[in-house]
Length: 170
Figure 1: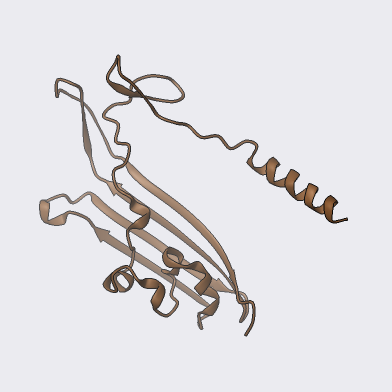
Figure 2: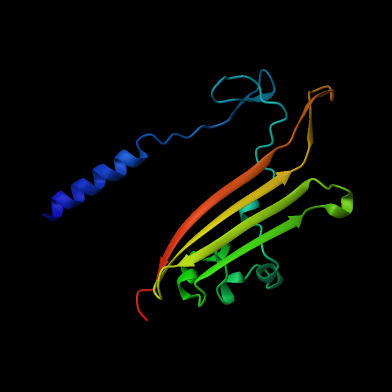
């Protein structure tokens, strides 16, 4: 019986991840550019890692503690720090929104982080949390090797998360 359950579980997991594929961006030294995985054409001014936007603390309360938001009482921003704490919250429902402008003192008004998070408690023991994070990198000019402008773009980063938490005891 145990082996049947284990075999079924392995088949289900393999079935779920069967269609998952990763696309690696590769560099072409002859053309001095990074290639689009699907078309093999040069990508304009490829930025491989602008910044690790998932590490940016979205709320002021957690950021004020030196990014140690896990040490405070539960609130909707726990979706960033530790979603397991949502089951410990005392309220049945909470919603939080934040907007954080970036590099405003440099005159860049189009770079910002927007974060929406919340949770619902089903009962004293369990809760479901959800969040959406959007980071706008502003307008960027694309240039070629001779520094001629080849176009502009508005790159952005996006994350959506759902979590379930449950207390194992009172």
